[in-house]
Length: 536
Image (cartoon, rainbow, N blue to C red; front, top):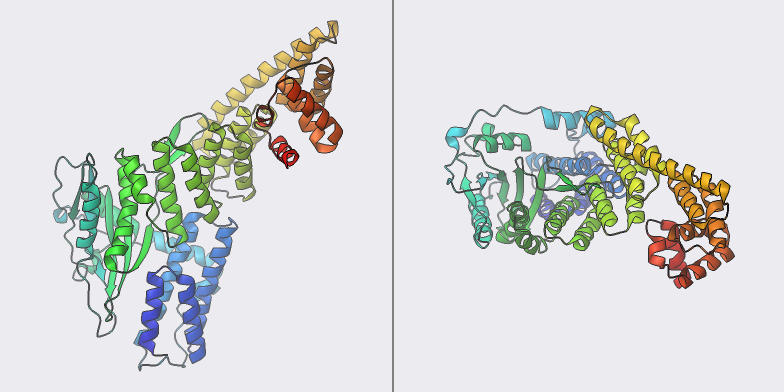
């Protein structure tokens, strides 16, 4: 295959975010030609495939997966550059310089590369003199840089109006919603003549945004091929924007700010690609400015082309639905996030809290429990804290105590106050239930058949984790014609394990005394599953 045709095809695929097919085609053609670059392409393909697999299994964080994908894309472009520099129109079979020795070096080498990526940055001098003047009325300032052009061969045409199209499209969206006081201005930089000052990574861009007092900066690279097709890499960075809400079991919220580099590949009709990107950014801005309805309208039109964009779009959608008080729709968006990346803690946490608030504590506990099994050490303390709080809400004091102790073992100093507060609540609740249990046992010594005291003892023992004692007391209360839902729940959960006849008997009696299955199965995964089976 003609070399320049192959390069153009691979860049088109990368532009469509179809990195998997790009690698497949690159490996096929390089191996067919016997090129020394084939091994480098195979190594890049291996990293891509491993990241995909780990991401599906929840073995890699969202941020690290995105970093790996970005590195693979960079390596593809490096390979194409090396291929282009080879003489002639055909792919050469002679050995070529290896581009990816670090991949074969294993995890330590990858960590070193990641460290270099984030910490080896060129110094960006103060640039306030190049900043535009924003209107005083602008509550949200957006800074757009001219895109850095990349030339393809002698026939390449340098695009120079990408930033203008971005400003135009985003301005159209913003102007269509009254009350969003946002302003978009250009940053004065020549990406060719001042290449050394042009940002490569998000921290460099953020420094420019900070110097210009802008909340959002947009920059990137653009290439127009001889065919007229555009390949654009759009990068953006929100500076100190609280755009993702972290829900708390207490009913409060805190924020989890996006800090990592967010990239979207666009291809085809340039205006279409830019429009899709700007819809995503507009959605975040509109929600930030108190316009969740407008944010939802735009975000729902975005069609994600890769896993990173799926996470970003649906987290933004979930946040907007929360602001609009649509918890069910917020959960739907979080479902899409977790289908793509099951180990993304913020999505796990928010879905768990929403499920709890909607009365489905069992599902909430299952979500957090599944996350803990992934053993993501960076978020394990948070997960145990949430699991402890949920268990306390589900009146399982023993479990709440167990999980807060696990959190204490892992926690750093920043968790001290939160752990102490939750421990105090657990201790207070435990003391109260022990008191109820003791008083009931004293009263039962005088009257062992007292149904109310048996109910009190059964429920207190259940909350304290004394399951067998709870079952004995509940059985005695049941035989005395108790109508307490807690008694029935204790007996049903125990009978569900190995006594089908008793389960049917207690369930039938619950129906007769007017205790609904919905009430009985609340916070109980065992009873939810069992009742589901009996309906089938």
